[in-house]
Length: 177
Image: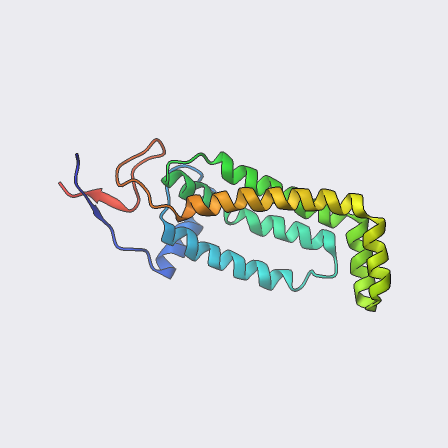
C-alpha cells in the first residue's frame, strides 16, 4: 500500500483564488476547504444581491439561479473527490432551479406577497386556501430539493480517499515515497 502525506488545508484567500480560477472546470477533484470557503463567498453574495430583488419574484429567481451556478463546478469537483457521481449535484441544482421558477411564476406566491404588504392575515389565509394545488406542488419540489441537497452536503463533508480515484489525483494527499 502506498504511503500518503496530507497537504496543509487551504486558507480563505487560497481557496477563493483556486475556486474562482476553476469556476467552469467540472473535471477533477476539490478539497473541503476550497468548497466551503468558496460557498461562504457565494452565499454572502447571494444574500446581499437578493436583498435588492425581494419585491420582484421573477427577477429574484433569475438572480438566485445565476448565483447558484457560481458554486456548481466546485461542488461537482468536491463530490467527485469523495468518489461519488456528479449527477447528485446536477439533480440538486436542477430541482433548485425548478423550485425557484415555480415560486417566481406562481400566482399564489405573488398574491401572498402582495397581501403580505397589507398585513391582512385573513386575506393571506384565504389566498393560501384558494391556491392549495400550486402550494402542494411547490412544497413537493421543495422537499425533493431539500432531500437531494442534504445528500450532496453529506457527500461534501466526507473525507476523500488519499489515492487517486476515477476523477483524478487527490488534491489533499501526495505520495510520501
